[in-house]
Image (cartoon, rainbow, N blue to C red; front, side, top):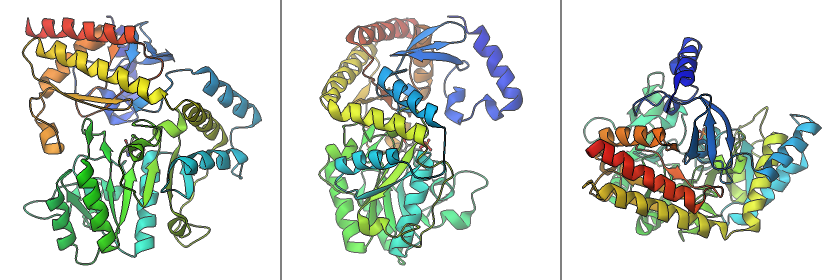
Length: 430
Ligand SMILES: *Cc1c(COP(=O)(O)O)cnc(C)c1O
């Protein structure tokens, strides 16, 4: 495939935008080549400015469960646009979308809308701290919760469970309140509780981790977190910005029996428009301004055009919950096919599926946490990614991302993808 126009566009972008992109992963740093610049999407396909067509397994990193340009969602958005882009005043569509969310999530009595997943998590953490009166929070290495200061944390030296900043510009004074534990490792969590003698406001977890590849939490582990939280007056936050309406209609909460105290949402609830949300039982949400003292606000929060897109998408999903069975079957067909293709050239692969989410690692070892995920063959992944792109298959440009099936993806497209995988691997290994 030719990428001449994209290469030129990337160079032009580089002059005026840091790294040429508005979010780092888009720069293709983890794989070979430059990112295609996208002209338009249609159903399951992306078209770049060089005229190349790709089957899209990224779907804007999750939001587009109905693919590109879904007719119903598009009609709702156009209707909303005609009424005005923003008012900074209440609209009924916010209540309608809130009602859809409350009706699906047992742990949510009330929900507040924001404009991104980052903002949802940042606000949820402030509320957890305000509600419990504790400063410390606990997160897991390899889970991503957006780019707010307290969450840009990596493991400190030696045996410390308190994190150090993972980015310049984040004061160590802030991250010293963030404890780091190992995913699916209860002992590491117990150690945090022992170290944090002044209490922990919340444990935040992706109950189905999607930002270190796809790595689900074990049911026993989630149960144990619930027990620990109850014993210590700590809130359990499920970050379902990715898994919400993706793993099932109710996200991870449609799969696990464990109930969180708070939930953060994003991606699919905006259907491609900027929407995030956080919710909890009424007693917790009552602490949020203007009902309570914990401050949180947003000029464009609950934006009517974004709400219309989300409402249309959620109502379509609710009207046809069997869609998740279909999406799950397709995801399984895809990873089984990829595994067969990869193993035919003697390379081991581990795979995972949760509803419309899929993941694969070039590795022979089960992946339960970030350290396991790090052992995947990233060099091989980079070559695989390039070969697939050249064959019209648009996969996430990092081995630590999750793939997504949309309703627009057909069995024939999956067959085409598997065929491309055989060809790519033959090229790499042959
Ligand atoms: C994407 C994501 C976020 C951040 O959402 P943005 O809209 O990118 O700010 C937070 N948590 C999880 C689990 C995510 O997948």
